[in-house]
Length: 477
Image 1 (cartoon, one colour):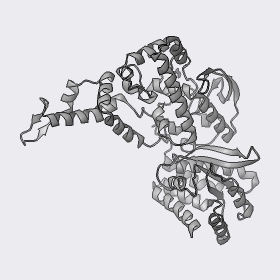
Image 2 (cartoon, one colour):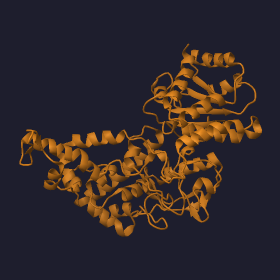
Image 3 (tube, rainbow, N blue to C red):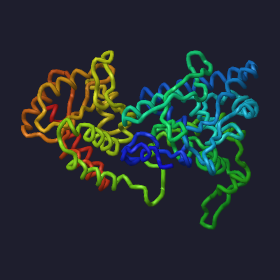
Image 4 (tube, one colour):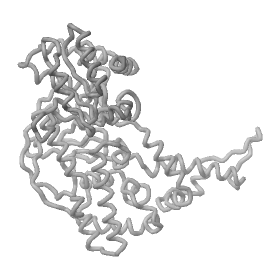
């Protein structure tokens, strides 16, 4: 079967989508990474992190009591997450989750690990560092099962975004963080033929786990041991003809072979090494594409095409949906992973009003991070109104967006429109809103969108940033 986007005729590439565009006939070789979730600062990731921490705490408490039956019951519900089609199964995707027969083995592995015995193990994302038999597949599948209900909510939001039909589904039990137990529920999911699909946000997956025992051992631990042997002038030190003292990594590794118990001992004695490793891992950017085949379009070709698409969509209410989808895809291609988790016509004020698009502001640096960190704006969300009008924007359009602002969502928004004839009037309306502390609004026309997409197609991100900053500076004059 084709990918999700093709099956449902979305006519969008992976770069225009917020989720991993999977197929139900093969697994996509990426993994749900709990550390990638942990380091995010958005509401969705915070909820996911709380579920993961709460579940793992329950497991560790059950092992410590000891309450083996409770521990096995907790682990036995971690079934194979067949609906995500992520990982590296051969043939038909099978998943590698924890079934009832594996639960006792996993509990035993945790209990026997040096990290558990010394109290070092407290985080699911670190299990792959410390517990034998735990690798990226198992961690990914454990995480997927724990946050399954959030992934279902996300899938439903994306289906609403693209008008994808969903069907009632009785799948695996869901982890309830309040009840601290598994709960069976009927849910709504999209299907490809008879196969349910669970969509996963791009920003929480990685090609390998952020915390990888082999990488940690090869880099931070080995480098530390080389320096320690040099400092102590150990037997591993060799003096070269030049007089330079040298310790070879191969000798260090031969003397201190990798094991997860050894890693636990090193971290227990030198926690700063793990802190350094985590700091480096935190700096890794989220993935934007997941297939290295030659026929998969790159971000440059996608943006070059999108820059031409705006001229093909007529203005007017009849074509509002086409313009809305084009704009949403273009903004995702331009600003992912700074802007993530788009929702269409998000209900506010008890459902009395609806917003065109709401993005979560996930930026760490740059324009959108500055808008979030500015106390006048506190732009945790970026609200986007799409206006496929043939005439200029008027006061009601600005009042509508201003009415969306509050202390939780923030006070920053974008209006997209086709063109502006009377720019001075539009600029004055934006200035009035800012000067009265009602909110900060920038307007992006087709020309602006095409300019940014063309810059992105030429890998000139600094040009995009300059355009946004220029628009924003106009609000301060």
